[in-house]
Image 1 (cartoon, helix red, strand yellow):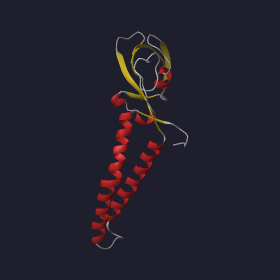
Image 2: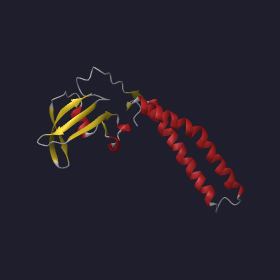
Image 3: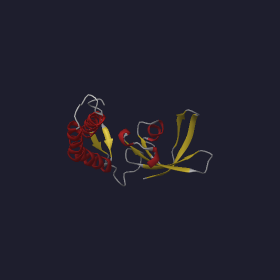
Image 4: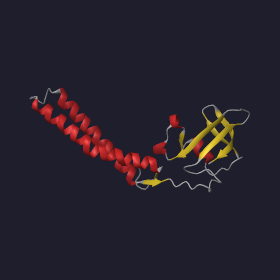
Length: 158
């Protein structure tokens, strides 16, 4: 991550990452230390699969701690103000409809660290997210997909 790049997060995601970091630095590190101690007690470390596995787990845990610390250090909390929902921005919940179709799709616009299609959360930097930014209810917009340009309209905006 670039040092001056903002990492947009909802308060909920920020709290979740803070909690995960706390768990990793306390309980997880303690568990791994116990695993390493047990593996050492088994003797020869050069052919000790338990020791190797615990060391790999320790490295992965420390990497995750660094990633979370970096995300939190550059986090900007999304402040979506109710009543100011005139235009799509971070934190907006948008219902869109493809021109010529009846199906509607609802998405929440979030920072890229929080994007998750299963939860219908799209990054403001994704092709669809970027096309939605700044648009208003009733606006039509086009964005490019692998199948070509797609035309949609904004049905609702919260």
